[in-house]
Image (tube, rainbow, N blue to C red; front, side, top):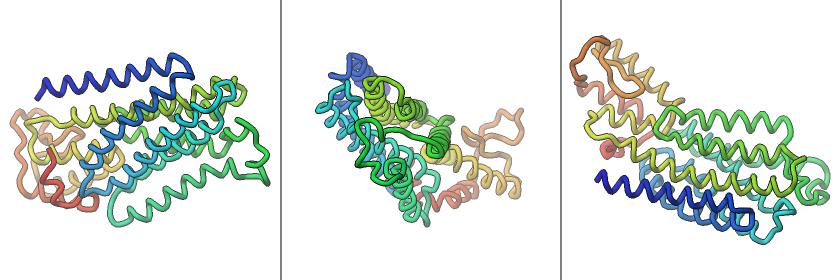
Length: 315
């Protein structure tokens, strides 16, 4: 099993590295290699979709599929545009793709039932809000030429930065450190939108590089998911780490606080830490043995996020 995991990990890194080299070879070749990475990224997306069965996370994964589809469309369009023009149409599609990334990251912050459907509607409105810079002003879209419309001014820059920081920071302390790659993609896209004085070809590189980073984040997230499946954990630790890695820091801290409040009231000799159950006495070397009440408590806290039957299949 370990050998198979090592081989698949090497293949993923070869894919990411090879397409990254293609991006570095120039704007004429880059769209083709980015297209390859984005097309293959549907494989880890499909694995995540299966993993999210019985949870409220599938709404966020819908945005992930939209990101991949828009990314591929942006690269197809890029092949029809001259790099010297800044590839404005490809840049516009990449901008919409980036707003879909932000919508997906923000969707996780309310991935629970009930309320997930209303939240999904709000995420669609979020995308519309980020299109306002294109639409504001009478006839701006008709008068804009080339890259003129591809810019992000205040207050949308503040809104963009807040959502990007909140969405990526939510996963930095989990096994899904692919959020770093995702965050780099958001930064590159931001630079392309803000640096209107740059040569058009430089800005075109931003659209391509951002799409490559978004595609790479799907594969690196899959690698993180495999690393989080550690054998030898007890039931509570397995469920806890599984939940923590998928919903991120915001919800994990809240669930841990509620669990530990119940543990204190019940006089249990252990608490739920970031890595799992730990004894109350820091000098104790005895293994933590959790009772049925602790398992029932954690499952009860997660009932709005996950259907009970799904927790039985956590590895």
